[in-house]
Length: 372
Image 1: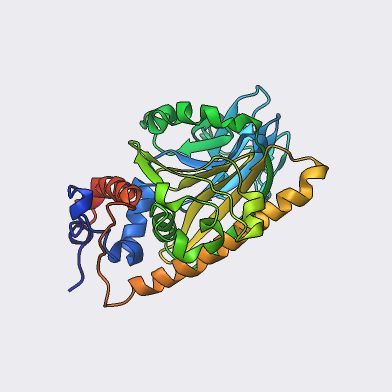
Image 2 (image 1 turned 45 degrees about the horizontal axis):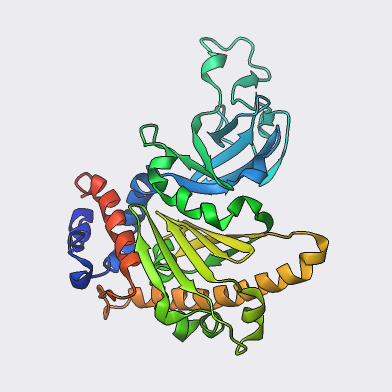
């Protein structure tokens, strides 16, 4: 007999302490009904990172993004205000911005030419003379909340959600010494993985457990024994001292400094910081067994002279990502097996993954009773 969503959610005990805890069950990674609840309760109610401030630095600059099936456009207004809207024309639902990014004076739907100001107001509706009871003022683009932190733009669909700073907690103060404003965007890469988005997040949050086994190059420059995990209310910090090693030359040359910092912000945003460089990972669900991982690379020096070094650094990241892709897709295949239901967690290593699962369970159970 097929389990209801409530029964599936009840398989996980979010109250169990780490030493007694299990992972979330395999069905949470496979069931389309769970994916639908996630759209509403995880991606529909939380602050979600969608892009960078430099993408919307000047009047008319915009970028588009899709969050859990919802098309969005983020744009800098002529008044300097940053705004976000559903990227949906109020006439017949076409995207008003049908390219990834650009600079415009207006947002004009390519379907029937309806035109919107950068503030979302309807400016033009061709050949609409004679339409009765048409309120132009009520047919602007539908706005959503947008806020920024450091380099990053966040949105939420929830009008009643606390401000972004409430989600961040003490995180802004903790990253001040890392001097993020002096790191400049360099390049973006995207990957499509054949796994659920939560598989990728689990892999990131296992406290370095997989690093010495899967990432030999990265392991050579991290002091694995001194690797630590610290959880905030909605974020986790994994950090490790760096060591000198000649075992893997490319890693020793590009992953330098005293410490590596790996921040994760619920539900799907990661910030990886080494000396003079940072990369961010944004993980977006595409289906129960597919996700998009978007990497943005930042360096202290983005001049032409630094191009070779920055390119080598990105190549090292590519190697790590290729290793993660293989293992995440292997996990997704294993989750479908009748041999697997739930797993246990390492007390030493997997406290951040435990936090992720408990926050996820709290969100999903908001809708559990109505999704039977």
